[in-house]
Image (tube, rainbow over all chains, first blue to last red; front, side):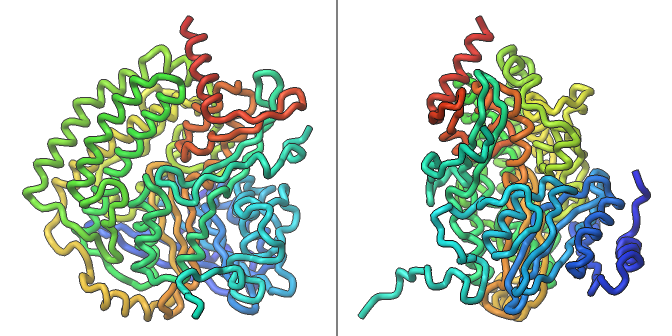
Length: 177
Length: 410
């Protein structure tokens, strides 16, 4: 097992490796319990061009990083994905949550798959495709997972623009006069 | 025939959208060669209820009650993970007593869930007398839940910044009495599940998940621990008061000295966790400091604070089935900008594929049940036998499973 880095050391290792491609990084420390244990959450925003290498870099820190899920939201002009990794689990108090944000322009919302590195990422990648209308390049199973097959194409439930589901919503509390 | 070629939406049965016991029905498509499973295809989403979408149109306090209804069994973990995420965004500090009260509720839910699961597992292999025995014990756990929260299932105990009800001194004897009842019955359960011939026959060497597969497929909770992966958010990143308490990772080698990653190991892990949870509640009752149970009892004031909060946060909790993960982004508005819910079964679906490959049709119920998903998962299965397709329903599968037990017993 490779040597475990401190939270500051992790951020530094990313900045050394990817330099300006890391747009921002912050370390959050939260406390819990009477002993005031520290919980460490690292947040980083990375450029799309280095995203896959960032995941490979995480795998040098921990052989099998745990990918909890990918979150995502529509910011108007772009779509942001947040990959929630955790590393250094297995030893008490040592786990660090690593949240990697990637920005995708709406004109070309594509990202590379990471299922070749972490096979467990498949369902979450499929979900982001159907919910946010992004395209995951090289995804091994390009099918809908949560939305039924008869749901109209081109409508993405988590979008906040004209491709969002607003026009499909029936507000049953509204009464026609 | 590839599994993709057999996919037909007409074979999918939607269950819900509202059903108290099922949270995520799943359809499997198996490719079968005689009795052996060659390949498995899993499709999810039959009851996708757009909870996250609905949440983005509600304020955080309303979301607590929406999150509670994501799952009937983890009705404490979901709102609590959401509360953790919101507290971290808004910088709300939780009183120490509330941290302990939160542990008590979390562990009580774990006892409820694991005992419920034990009963379901027994039912799946056709051992219904054990189902009745375990659920009789679970009834006591529900009674205690009702005593502490006022409700048996949707507990409504969570509040951002604390909990809504205290465990006062005069309530402690009833809690201790119930815990002692669990302890008295634990040995009986342990003997049935770990020493009984029928259980061993049906669970040893069945549904194996290797350590490497568990890690690569990002499995979580008892499913991954039974494969020897030490992963438990309560210990890895102690939230609430878990960092103050004395306990350790539960992996099957604690009891048997070896890890096989089969159904039997998953039974061991869950049983030992019940014992651990009883111990954790006792530790909490001993160590609990006096003080407030919530940082801000006035809801309108709390909402006003949350309306000013901006940023993103994550809430992670070790639910009975594994890690529950909530991501929240607030942007100084009444409703959150984004909310993502990740239930443990989401990650424990992929490991089914290596677990089921090579097993017999009659093993499907117990193998699928061993990850503790919602049981609707096996409600309807399309089976491809020599290229001919037919649908097996839950009753038929259950009958096959019972017949296999009888066959092995003979």
